[in-house]
Image (cartoon, rainbow, N blue to C red; front, side, top):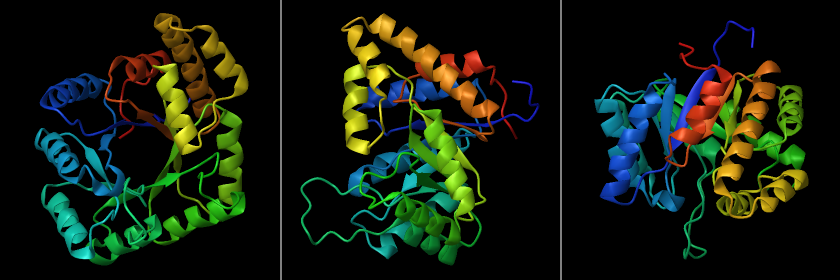
Length: 284
């Protein structure tokens, strides 16, 4: 890559459920910090089910001087609780939030009130002004619950119209899906940057399960190649590393503003791709 502008780099974690998982995550965070990402993000379970764990990890990272963005959705909480949580983040020095609609928690009946991401963005702007850089989710292959492509673009524009600063996409393996999506976003009047979400290929069974659940397509040729490796995890990792590195190169060479890695709380898969790309310094 000859462009002297350094792409934005970020890594996403999920809050661990055990003390052992927490210790591993803190170590992975330290290792990935050597790659000088612009920030880390920490997910928020369905219905806010990991709210306290997310806050614990986020505030711990921040106390160590690390730039970190909590994911946030209303879940089953009311405005007072969410406003208090955001106030805690502001008081802790957090200045970035990933604002989401969030998933429906399992076992919850029809009384659950879904609050859309554009409403959460507007709520944060109303109460906290421009203190936070607000990231929102985008879906190059279309949200699985969207009625059609145009509706999904319209919903995304609503998030930006409400005050979002940038977007992060669901992961994908077909770069043309991202490029076409960006053309459609621009045609709809979306001018904010949208960063590709990158999922390293670690375990084919898990990848298939995730992809079927979230609507991310695994191209048929890629699925067949991975199936052919069977239980040969080393071949799967080597193939996945080469494939995703090439995907990232194609994205960056054609104007993607940066990369957001879904690390699955692991160091090596994301780090090897970043090192292959020569991205070893932060953009700002």
